[in-house]
Length: 117
Ligand SMILES: [Zn+2]
Ligand SMILES: [Zn+2]
Image (tube, rainbow, N blue to C red):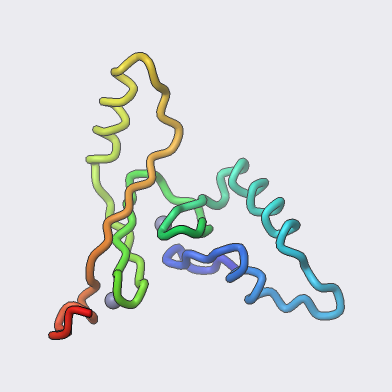
């Protein structure tokens, strides 16, 4: 299901990709499995829009560049997230667990578009 690191699928999207055959798989069992995988560090949950999406695990340092037009997602590696984490840890009154940075814009196949709708 989560084959490529660039794939970000909602639980419903994962369900759609699983051929249940004779035994239909329900959404809650997919959630349970994903939560377990997340605890094991195999997948991560990322919020790319209102829906949580799941993908193969990657470090928080890879932030998500999301194309507002086609939904294409690019991973961008940056040290800024580590700096942010260090800075947050320095506060002393808050322990950051997960940093999920999302930047919305246009991918290069959508950028040449003239219309701004
Ligand atoms: Zn990602
Ligand atoms: Zn695009």
